[in-house]
Amino acid sequence: MKKQELTRRQFIAAASASSLAAVASTTLPAYADITRKAGKLAILGGEPVRKDKAWPKWPYVDNNIVDAVVKTTRSGIWCRIQSSHGTVPTFEKEYAKLMGTKLCVATGSGTQALHTCVEALGIGAGDEVITSPYTDPGTIASILSARALPILADLDPATYQLDPGEVEKRITESTRAIMPVHMMGQPCQMEAIMAIARKHRLAVIEDAAQAPLSEYQGKKLGTIAPLGCFSFQASKTIACGEGGAIIGDDEELMDKCYTVHNHGTTRQGRTERIGPKYRMNEFQAAVLLAQLAGAQERFKRRNENAAHLTSRLKECPGVLPQKLYEGTASGAFYIYAMSYRKEHFNDVDRASFIEALAAEGIALSPYIEHGLHQEPWLDNILKTKAYQTAFSPRRLQQFREEMSCPNCDQVCREMLMIWASGPLLASKADMDDIADAILKLYENRDKLSAF
Ligand SMILES: *Cc1c(COP(=O)(O)O)cnc(C)c1O
Image (tube, rainbow, N blue to C red; front, side, top):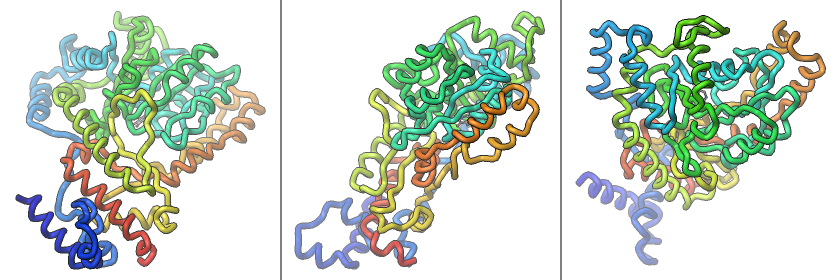
């Protein structure tokens, strides 16, 4: 009923506008053609494509989650070491099962999970780890916290992922590991990265913080390398406020991760190495356990909606959805990402495009303003005793001089994204709103510079 009314209203809007003559003189255009061209741009006073309609909220909340937190509160088991049957050990078993790995260690955040892996591999002062400049600051924080040197390699500008060729170029005698990041929840070219790691005998830690349940070449992300890390921070597609996890099959390595994250103390209670205290608490795990029940269904829905949106956007040459590597079976869609090509929009800059789209009722974001190679940590670590002692002045100077990632700069300039954890759980009609608004701007691109 609602849909029919909308159709009629939009048809009238279309018919009363400039397209009336065209409609009369040629065959009737398809429904989509009429709606997307309907009327004037909202920013110039026209009707917005989307009005008074909310998106599904994120983080996800239901009564099971609320009940689980209450139950944990009443149980008095608030910390994992109080019980081997508490929510944290149970979550670790369930998450490992879901991912198809033998083991899981839950942590207080994704950054903590990554740092735990770096420490467990014995990586520290004097060592180098290669990762992406286009990521959450937590990625490099995990390397810096171990006083190792994060080396940032440039991206494939169409996929926004670490370019394996650029990784190989940056390997030195001191390189110990590669930390590929599955940006937006979509896979990196893991087979190429693993091959480089084997050739140069490097460890690999997958930063799958944005990518729970995504599959590439028959494997879940986070299970391709020996160690995979996840984040359950409030915005992520499985969320508990702050939280993280490490998964893996190697018992010895996973035991080391447990020891590191447990202030250097083993499961048997021997304190034997350097380690922060990064344990997940029982409330975090209670939320996660209750949320896992529907996680796969929500994951599937995001994928279906993303596929629909991508197929609709094929009509628009100025907006290119994130390119996916062959072998990508599904993605977590933490973010639905696109590149904005202003030459197809009458050279209107991205900020104005976002403003015009917001007026149509669709909120898009530029995401990361600039890559981590453009942030002040680069200069600041060079002034610290830890780095001055662990690396030669020549290496530090070279590190600073070589820190350039032009493809990442391009991605930052062109990025247009939708925070997808909640919005991609909406209906196909909601996806059509996004596509219709973008297509409306495209059809009216000659008027875009007029505001
Ligand atoms: C969120 C995120 C992290 C950090 O996880 P936290 O739980 O916020 O510490 C690391 N890497 C990527 C790619 C992320 O998106």
